[in-house]
Length: 207
Image (tube, rainbow, N blue to C red; front, side, top):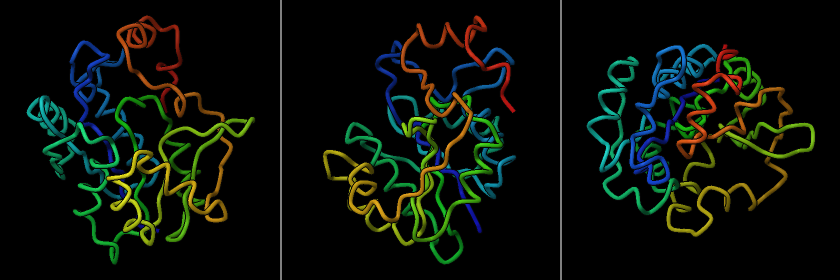
C-alpha cells in the first residue's frame, strides 16, 4: 500500500494572530510541519506533500525545506476552504502510483506515528479511514483511497468539502479506534499554543 501524506498548510491563521501554523514551534524546537512530516514518514507514508498559499506561502515553504519536504502544491485562493487545498494537492498525485492520501491539517501537529501506522493498515483504494476515540468521535488525519480522489476534487466547491464525500456512502468508511489525543487536538488559537508550550498537554509524548 503506497501512501502519501497531504499536509494542508495554506490557511491564513486568522485565529492564530495571522501566523503561519506550519512554522509554529513545539517545545522540542521542531516546527509543526516538521513534526507532522516526521510522524507521517515514521508511520509509513513514502512521501509528504504540503499545500501552501497566501499570505504565508514563503514562510511555509521555508518550514517545508527545513523539514525535508520537497513536494509543494500552491493554492492561489485558500479562502475557498481546505477542500480546495486538498484538490490542488490531489492533482499532483498519480493514482496509478499512490493508493492512499493521508489528509492532514498542519495544526494537528501532535499525532503519533503509531496512529499513522494503524490508519494505513486499515486503508484501501476504495476506503475512507477515520481515527476515532472510544465514543466514535472522529479526528485527523483521515486516509482517502485513490478511487475516491475524483469525488474529493469535486467536493472543493461544496459547502461541506471533504465531509460530503465521507457522508456520501457510510459503507466505505472505516473507523479505527486509537488512544492518541493528538488526533483531536488542533492548535487554532494562541491559548492552544500556550497549552502545548507549557507542557499542559501531551506534546512531549510525541512518537
